[in-house]
Length: 83
Image 1 (tube, one colour):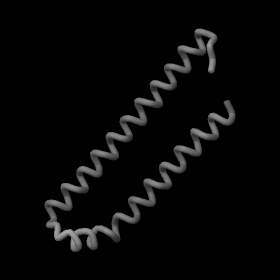
Image 2 (spheres, one colour):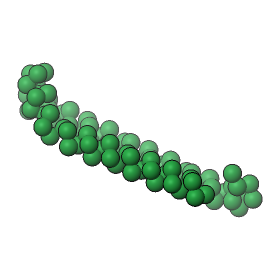
Image 3 (cartoon, one colour):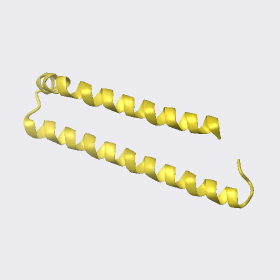
């Protein structure tokens, strides 16, 4: 159980590290991307909104997986079939 907790904590930490890095890179890169692809403000806003929706979808999927694994653990623990 101790190693499982360590790996889950490390996964969450690394995920937040990658997310923070990508959010910090996005700020300085936005004008360059806009100039290179000749995008107007509406197109840039659309890309950012799709990025937000994708992040929200991943968050909902992660929450679903966490809840499912918790309920599965409780069910198996009650059945005395702990993995």
